[in-house]
Image (cartoon, rainbow, N blue to C red; front, side):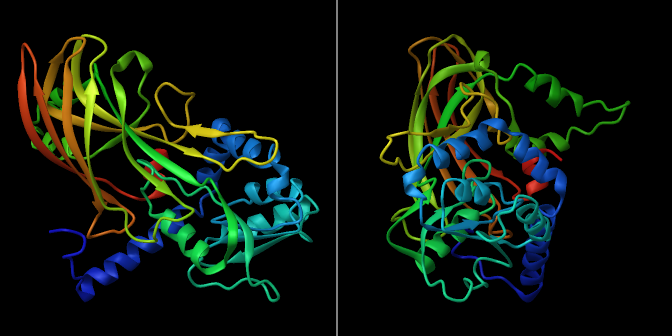
Length: 353
């Protein structure tokens, strides 16, 4: 059943409302925001993108979508924004208001509590010049916050206005997980109890973990891109072919998804890229791992071909489902496989809390 074929029943609608409540409640926890703020790569990228391109903000009206504790709003105010509207749905909005007062920015930053889709801008403000948001989830599109940013764009962004970041790219690479076999074998004997049935469910959930550069066996392949400047506000659904060129001999038993985002460049020409690649410094997003049922024994110059499809879950629009097709012909293995994965969109799961 596809996302578009799904017709929710009354019971399912109640479940969706419960999931939505649980999602926003997860972002009411201070430890979530502490974890994100401690991600220096993430926070520094936004700081540099805003403060090194002050001309994009000076004298402008800025909208911060999903402001959390309001750090991006404070960056925008520091860069010279005339007015910043910081929208936050959860109770963290009350914390953000206090932070603005403590930093003497309450005259510039106005915190509005509520869902982006349900609130209005303060009286006298009809449009904004810039939208800033940290909307990215695992695999870029988890949590579906992208759609809230695009909603705000369509409703309030002025003609020629900017969005930071304005482009997101999704990539895939092949890697070896040396602990994979031990993890699966664990379920076969847990204190003398056979729990091997768990392996099937375990192997169908994409995992979020940090992949070391030493585990990578292939180059990377571009999968999908979103341009927030002009792409339509609709559920993310795509099906992309990929080909990975093997660079080192080994056993590929997982494919790895990661993303990067880019920011607009001001007159100073200071370009900023925030990457979650295994080849880049650690971020709290880490990477998303798809473990394969059949390992691929590879050598340099082998090629792994496949198709990755991504779509929202019919049971929870903030979660994503994946279909993965693999085609590989090597000296030791020939694999033609298909596998589906289902993930969760709750913030606590994203951060491992």
